[in-house]
Amino acid sequence: MNCKLFWSVALAILGFIVIETVFADTYPVVVEAEATAVLSAEREGVLSELNVAEGGSVQKGGLIAVVYHKDLEFRKEQGVAKKEYFAVKVENLTKLNEKGLVTDEELARAKMEQHINTMDIAMIDAEIARSTILAPFSGIVTARRVNPHEWVRPGQPVIELYSPNDLRITGDIPAKIASGLKKGRSYTLTFQDLQKDIKANLDVIIPQINVKSNTIKVVWNVPKSGYKAGLLPGMKGFIDFGSE
Image (cartoon, rainbow, N blue to C red):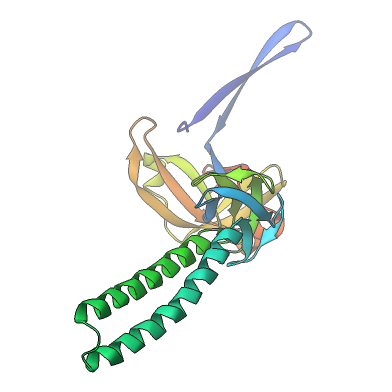
């Protein structure tokens, strides 16, 4: 935020004002989740299943929710039945065509009907697949935007989640300080909510300066000690370059 923070603390003692000036080279940092997702419905319908709750965990590929699609399954069964019929029809007409008993046009029409039916089944399969919401990665559910049996629309958020195993710590550091930081070096970050110092290696210095604040975004990896300490996305701390 600011390069060197000066602040004055005014204390009233026995009617006298005492001014204490404090100097610090501290800058705020925050814990972020690298893998986050807002999962949305892909098709319109009633949410017939919702298998997660806020704070619950999900596994990659696990079933999150289902939009009602029994009607699509019935249509697919009809399509499969027609598929068998068209296969027999084309086979018989092909034999008759070879004997000159059926025109090429009649055979071509039967093959067209067979192809259309195959495409209809494929489209129904795609709609059925779009009726399910699967977890893109293993993680923790942070918000549930809808309830079971509610009507959802395409693009409507259903849940939010993040991966607790992919955290990072970021801070906007003044450019003249950030330019002297070393990638891979360990820095001490203090998190007062945990009452702990975390030593984290600098991972990335984003090569772009914020022209309004003249700062550069710096990213630290979260070490195993950070996970054990209980770091969570959104948790705030600070780095004191005066002690580095």
